[in-house]
Structures are given as structure tokens and as C-alpha cells.
Length: 131
Length: 178
Image (cartoon, rainbow over all chains, first blue to last red; front, side, top):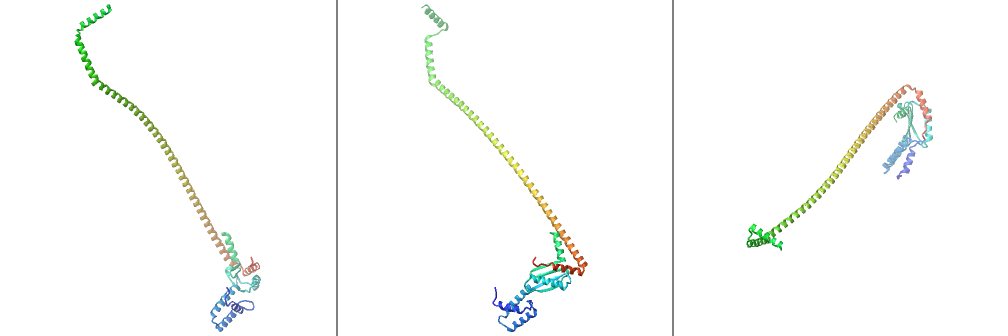
């Protein structure tokens, strides 16, 4: 159910995104400072809804990618391109290294996890033994 | 006439031989008749009546005895029949009870056999489940050890280039729609 501030919140979220459509921390801070200066009687409610929307947007924008080892920029770029081509919204990629994967990747996208690593293949092998 | 005279002579002879005194004889005859009449009238008649009554009683008694004998025989016959029927009924009851007892024993044996079979089946099933569980746990344990060992070996033995090559290949094969 849309709230009475929904259009304002949408505008504020838009103000918090950069040219790539990604939520920018500094821009969010600017919006928060602006809200504080206005000192509206509805300040608390607007702030709460704004932060909820920002959290939700961040959750849908964030793509956590783990590699089993140090990976070249080209591989990262290729992976970014493949994901961006499939997902039509702006995405914020966060790359990290997870040695437990040994090699390969694990992608966390909202509630989905896509993994192709040596560890996952060994786990599948283990499951095939037990099933 | 001669014959009549002869008979008279004979009678005269007899009277003289036995010393019969005719008036005395007649008086005694009259006395006898009077006594006989009195006896017949007052004693003999009652005696006859009593005898007849006794005879009738005896006849009745005999008749009753016969009746009783017949009734007794009938009763004995009925008793025999009743006893026979009772005996047959008792035999039937005993036979039925024996049959029921046999059937009950058979049913109990069958139940016991079924229960034993069920227990054996359950025990076998439990053993199979236990064996499967042990095998499953062993498989899981072995698989876990294999994976752990392989992970350690691969972590050490794979070079950085090989790892990067694997990641690159995996990235190329990435398909989010699958």
C-alpha cells in the first residue's frame, strides 16, 4: 500500500543514486542533511521510509561475487557484463576472495546464489556418493 | 314190585345195621338246617362278602401292580431314553467343546505364528534399516573425508594460474537463466 510520502521518497532515492543508477553513500548523506535542515514535523516518518527504501534498493542492487583466488580484471569484467546483460536494473558489484572455494566463483544476488567452484563440485560429488 | 320190596328190605337192613333212630335223625336234620341257615344268614354271607371284597381288593391290587409295573417299565424306558438323549447331548457337547478347543488352539497357534513372523519381519526390517543407516553414515563420512582431503590437496597443489583458468572457464559457462 503506497504511503502519502511515496512520491517524495522516490524522488529522494533518485537523488541518492549516481549517474549509473547506483546508491551512493555521499549522496545519501546529502539527502539526510537536507532532510534534517528542513526539520519537518513529519521528519521521523519520512526518514524511516527513506531509509527503508534505500535498504531495499541496496539489497536489490548489490551483487556479491566471491572468487576462490585472485582474479584478473578481464574475468571480473566478463562476469559483470554477463550478469548485467541478464539483470536489467543497475547493479553494484562487490568482489572478494574466498580461499575455501579453491577456484571458481560464488555469486549472491538478492536471495539467489550461483556457484561454480571446485568446492561446490566436490560437494556435489560428495552428495552423489551419499544419495 | 319185587324190586321195590327188595329196596325196602335193603333200607330196612341198613337202618338196622347203623341203628338209625328216625325221629332223632329228623330232629338232628332240622337242627342242622336251622344252624346251617343261621350260619349261612349271619356268618357265611359276611364271610363270603369279605372274601369277595378281599378278592376284589387283591384283583385291584394285582391290577394296580400290573399298572404300576407297566408304568414303572414305561418310566424306566423313558429314563433310559432320557439318559440316552442326555448321553447323546453330552457327547455332542463334549465333541463340540473339543472341536472348539481344537479350533481355539489352532487359532492361538496361528496367532502366535503370525506374531512370531511379524516380530522376525520387524527385526529384519530394523536390521536392514540399521545396516542402511550405518552404510549411509559410512558413505557420508568417507565422502566427507574424500572431499576434505581433496580440498586440501587441491588447495595446495593447484597453482594460481590453474585456479584463474578454472575461474575464467567457470565465468564463461555462467548462465543465470538456468
